[in-house]
Image 1 (cartoon, rainbow, N blue to C red):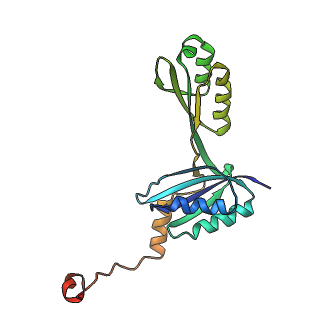
Image 2 (cartoon, rainbow, N blue to C red):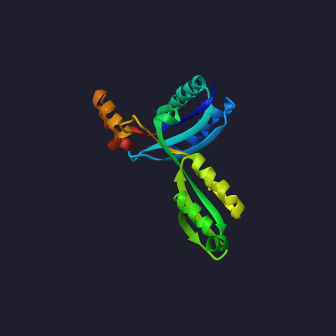
Length: 195
C-alpha cells in the first residue's frame, strides 16, 4: 500500500549530485513531492530531504540505489511518525483587508503567522507547521483576497537519530582510515617528470 515516506540522504557537497539522485526517481516514474537540500552539523556534509508517496518495498530499493552513488554517505527512509518535520509558508494578502477586517487578524494569530513585509498594497505573512495547517490557513485566507501563497519543502529530523556527526566519529574509531602518505617525489618534480 502506498504511503508517504521521507528519504534522508547524507552526502558530500559535490556538483551534479542532485541531478543523479533525481534521475533515480524519474527512471522509476516516481514523483518527488518535495526536495530540500542544505548543510548539516558537519561542515562538509549536506543533507537531502526527499518526500515521496510509494510502497515501502519500492522506497527500500530506491534508498539502496541512492546509497550506491559515489558521493552519498548514507541514506535512510522513514514514515511521518518517525520524524519531527515542518514546512514553511508565505502568504500575500491585501493590506486593506488586514486593516479593516479583525477576523483576518485573529485568523493569522490563531495560526501563529508572523509579519514579514508590510506595504501599502499588500502584506506578507509567514508561518511554519504541518502541511495540513499550512493549507488550512491558505484556504481560510482565500475569501479575504489571498494574492499569493508559497510553501517550502519539508525539513525533518529523525526522532531516533543521534546525529550524523556522532555516527561518523564512531565509524572512524572502529575503522580508522589509512594515514595520508606524502608523495616522496613531490619536491623532485623537474627531475622525475621530464619529457
